[in-house]
Length: 448
Image (cartoon, rainbow, N blue to C red; front, side, top):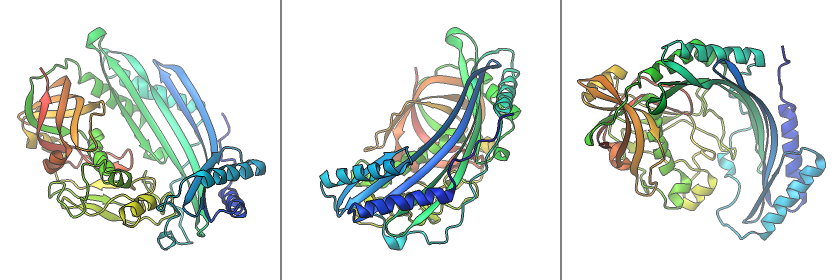
């Protein structure tokens, strides 16, 4: 059995490197500087039809430094941690800064917003010391469970198991220093049923910070197989306007569009369909979107953002009304606002539910379309116009009738958000956005 892989540097060593870089920047005349030092390692194994397809190992490291000469900014990076490489990288960043135009909004985060000196480790590091042999065995078990669901499943795109770990240290010349390690593991499988033009495929996967948070390999494979078989006999439907139920695995994508629209870069560039939306009724009154950066083992958990700004729990949307944006320091200054601690993205967003389980949502819909797969990226970020290819199931009398494919769903996100009729309790935790299935009234389905 192979030896466990470990980091090549301690957290203390990363912080020492960060301190060294800041000292080099100061000696070079920079008025301010910030540095991020990181390293990671991982393993990914894929099997297909029982045979090993790929075995991949990765190990990487990086130092990125940003320097400021007043309102001029420059940055550079290196994967070489030697003393000479650090000097060269800082010098490169300084050269760039001296040659760039002044930007009055550039600069470090407000010192008053930085996380305090006693930052607790968020506890996101649960390494999985699994050997290649055991990883292959789990992937084979997963795929075999999928193939065993139905004799018509004769082909596979494979089953993959990955485990990754990373750590970082961030520091700036305003006195902030922080960092921690984290892990991310996943197991998934995709299989194919049918032949020629009648082929259908589907998949399932599980992900978690630690191996104990993953679904069993047999369960993942069986779910992938069942989801694939149920798509046999898919057909097109006539063009119509009906309610649409977005299944939980894809439902969070609707809120991803909202996050993009109320994020700083979209707002100050005026490329958002939701400008000046704070205090406005954007969603149906029963929709609340909560951000919590302290969720145990959350994929978006962190005590501070990419600039060292302390994160905090808040309602981004309450009773359908937007309460705040997602801002880093630069975008906040451009908008005349204050950083919300979201440099680098949102932190563990959870969407409220309206009490129905999945079966209850089907009954609530009565007649309409259940969407289980989306194709393409047909969203206009400026107007909110929405048009995406889809596949799923036609629903009659609150029950799934038959599978459908080759259709397009169209609408406008502003209206869709207001038309959210219900949100299910079937929450699926796979990333930093968590919500149940979402029922939206009156969307146009383009079919035959």
